[in-house]
View 1 (tube, rainbow, N blue to C red):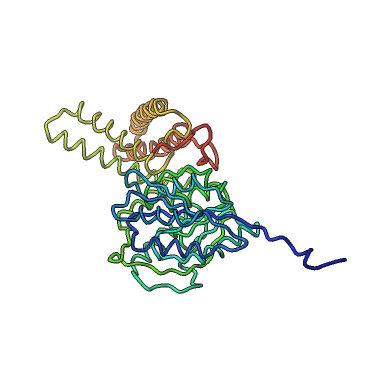
View 2 (view 1 turned 30 degrees about the horizontal axis):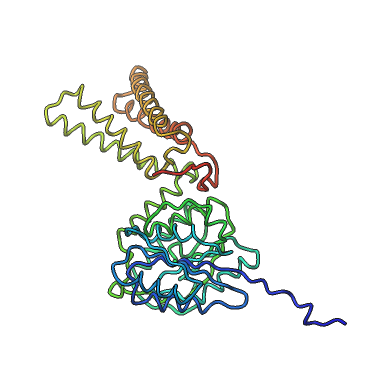
Length: 386
């Protein structure tokens, strides 16, 4: 006989691994964990991974006491303080759930929001879901205006490079399918994790969703740790993890900045050496070589991926050959323009502009060529070593 009870859809239980990086959070850790434990139900089991980042207070002991009371909790400790990104790297490696979520050990974020963030993935629509503090669906503590503007600026800049339309790139609440986050090679040790992971998720062309969350921010007196130097690191990370795959015109614009700094450095070193009495035959080539070295360093720091195609030695040799070739082209083209009636200043400016284009093309196509999208996934130990 037909019974509706026997034909109801089966409840599919999923497991969420919640990674809690912890550094000197003795005042809030136990309450945070209690709130996370409370979101478990018949459809969602939990694995809580607390990674203590060499706390100097009683955070580690509190974490171990919690693990003794709750089988869902596992505790790992870093031997030295490395930062949030390093703690998350450890936590993601240890995760066994269907999904992974980041939960700060303070009380700024409400774990009840995690269940909402999971839904697009459980419905089969998303691979990654971010919680946004700027999509006002919950309550928000009113805090620092300029801190908020800084977050919005960094999100805007990140969106320019990733072609995502996020509203809160710096959010803590990022939820991933476990197999995806465990494929990504995380390199940032501190708060640079946020722009880094957004860049790599965008590069993999994953299905990204965003949902509003509540936010109960802390003041610096209450223990907030992120500072202005982390903002500058975020700028660096946005460039470093995105610029190598940005559209060519944007890459050329960044290279103009690098080339301009190198040219000013070249001029400054030359003038200093010349003022010290060094002959031009020595001061000019020394300044040129040092500027070329700076240009190379800035290229791999901000624009191109170091060892993207070649090993370090081959890359440097090719770079030296390129610089020497462009130097000869610069000399030949300057002489050519002068011999054809162009003034010396105009000839040199024209040759310099030609050199900039050739320099960029040579670096982009021969020295630092890309292997294609999704290259942040480690394959045969192929990592960006910067």
